[in-house]
Length: 261
Image (cartoon, one colour):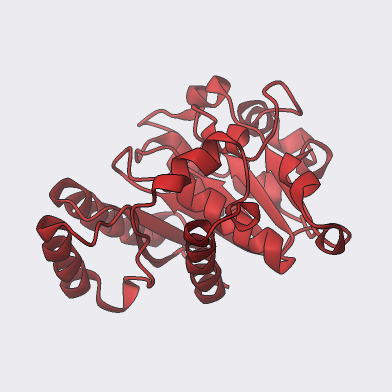
């Protein structure tokens, strides 16, 4: 089972969008996937067609980590009902729902024993091939909890000055955190989101990212797509949305997932 945190120090770069795109690709490919929504805004929960109030939310599970079996509290994603019949039988996509209650763990001074709570919850879990943890855009307690349990961190950035700087800081933070708390943790790579082909600034920042991140920069770059917000607003998997632009976006996520797995 591969456990991957999807992270960014900068909000608004599309971290949750990338989580959902990878979940859609995994569902299409038959990869048994669990999405853990650690962001107190709980956007992944909504986007994966899970009603608020379903299941036991992530903050409560973290609080009861030593007494709880996580497999008894996951919620089935509503995306499964949108699959073609031939894919539905073997498909599995579950969610640990998010809510504002998780914010009680999002402290900058979180204790090492609290950082191990998600790792404790996931110990012995064998029902999934892939676990995606959607982290809040900070390096406070919830992100550290996610990193302590993960094998890899996938960074999401956009081609802008502040996002490039934030990604560099995050990569340094991963190395420091791995040395001190999580020797198994590695950086999976950097996914560039919301790139515009007609922007000189974006072109310049992409060249800068190639120089800074080298083999860690993942391809393809995800281009700005007018349909993406509509797809997410409908709580739909991108692989089931009609149209050529959605198919192009779905193929991009297929390629990214292939590299990550």
